[in-house]
Length: 517
Image 1 (cartoon, rainbow, N blue to C red):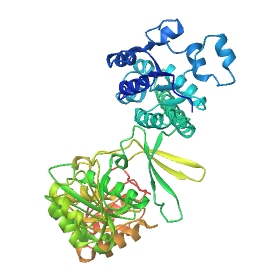
Image 2 (tube, helix red, strand yellow):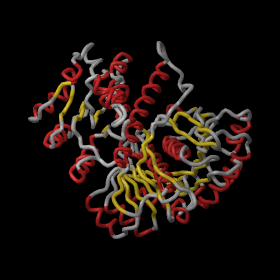
Image 3 (spheres, rainbow, N blue to C red):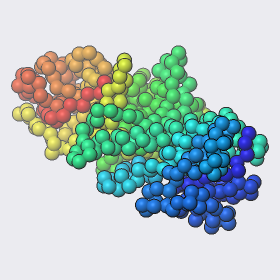
């Protein structure tokens, strides 16, 4: 292993850089640097050689050109034992370590900066340095992440240099880093469209993903799986912190995401707190109330059999009383909430296998992806603003009163998170029956009615899409439904409205479909 005799350090994120430079300098390394990094290292008491002193050429164009020089890139790319003669002929001295991180392009565009600001934050020299060092990893150590200073330092202390395996791993990390950086720029330019507005979905779409963790398996034990985060994304899966319990499974994560999004949408107004129980990626119970215990009790009552082994999410911090109520009543795979009260932690610890997760209830994502054979479907996420009473179009003779409208809006919100065809029966801020995933909408109506039993009488019904025939309205009436909310837009809307009038029901159209496949 070749010792580090010359190191180039030029970083925007200066975390740990001065200390790392001190470590290298104490072992006889020459530190080469630029601009603010050089000043920071000098202030720590370490001697620094400016890049311009190495090249004999000053930084120009407001720092746009400083490291793009043969005396720098030749020093990084020179193959030991192969290019020694050429290096000596041109006065090139090898650089053994390169630590570089890049201009904040992603942060600039995420903050809504204008196009010229974005262009100014495209790093040219930094990626070139990283790629050169990564290419020549047989002889050069490359560091793109300040978190890797400690690894490199430990290896130098132990071996006097960095091991080949570590140099290769760091090279892979550097190439991945510059690839993500370039993809972010390419996506921004494609969306910006040069002069005016670009395409909503560009011709080439790249995903910037980082693996967060391997999972025990996928949907089934014979399938391998891992969780990746989307760079710049706000998904709940990335914000989640697991406080206790067995590792989260693939299915746990899918169910928890559904439960938290539904709970967040339900509990956003008027001091209400919401509890949602999800089983196999669809809610089996949901409720809003003045406190978590009341909301949980009502949500669980919807379908106690399905709630067993489910995933439960709260819209507010999980308190001691709610934790006790849940653990006393049912087996639960995951408890998710924005936070957990201190006095609830000992209660939960008594059931050590229960996975307890805190995650942002407000997390959203701009797009949703689904894989198909040989491709990926991309769509805007269904982040529609909560429907308000003023957005309803009442189409029947009977008009719903304020309490009925509140139940209709509640049922409509839940239906958006239920697998299609989705039918939700609700009353008094709680679900009483849910029909999901049926090939025929009228079958979902009957399934929700069977789940609700006598509780269907006097309840309201939400449908995630319009009724193609009046049979679903007739079936709802037979179960005792008094009001219906649905998108409208069927060729037979007039027949459906006539059926509702004939049964003495109120019906409101939303004008928006909310399928979830």
